[in-house]
Amino acid sequence: MKITWLGQAGLLFETGGQTIVVDPYLSNSVAKTEPHNYRRVPVDEKFLRIKPNIILLTHNHLDHADPETLRHYVSAESSVTVLASGNAWATVRKAFGGVKNNYVQFNRGTEWTEGELYFKAVYAEHSDDKAIGIILKAEGKTCYITGDTLYNAEIFKDLPDKIDYIFIPVNGRGNNMNMADAKRFCGKIGGVAVPLHCGLFDEINMNDWQYTNKKVPEFYKEIQL
Image (cartoon, rainbow, N blue to C red; front, side, top):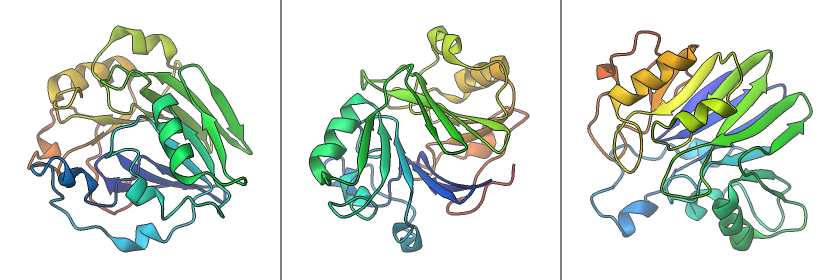
C-alpha cells in the first residue's frame, strides 16, 4: 500500500490496483473568500491527472470537498465511486452528476466494501454537522482518517480495537485538535500517527508535535510507514 500526502488533509492511497483520493485540495479556492488562507505550496499538477476509482470526502468545507479540484476527477462522463458525508454528498452530486458515477451518502455508521477494500464512517466533532472520520482496511492494515475533528470521547465508541495508522489534524484551528489534544487522542488509540492540516495555510511545523510514534509527511511524497 502506497500512501502519498497531497497537502492539507489530502491523501492518495494506491492499493490492490485501486486508486483512492481523500479530501483533495489542489487549487487556491479558499483564498477567494478567505485571502489569508492562501496556498504556501504550489499545486503539483501531476496529481490532477490521476484517475481515482474511489473518492472519500469527510465533510463539506472547501479545502476538503473542493469542486475546482474535484472537476479533474469527476465529470458527467466519469465512472467513480464517491463516498461522501451528507453535506459533501449533496455538493458533489449537484456539481457533477453523471449516470455512471456512484455517489454514496457516507454518514456515521455506514459501511462500504469495494473488492478487497473496506470502509466505515465514524463520528467526528466538527463545525460541519455531517462530518465523519473514515476507517479504511486494506492489505491487512487498518487506517483511521479522522477528518477534521476536535477531541470528543464519543469518537472512541466507533473505532476498532486495533488501528495501525492514524491520519490526524494537529493545527488547532478551525475546530481541529491542537497538538496537545492530538497527542492525548493518539495515546488512547495507539498505532503510527501521521499529523496533517499544517503548512499549506500557515507556518506550523509538524515536527514540533510531541508525539513519539509519528511520521511527519512531506508535500507530494510517499509516507514511509
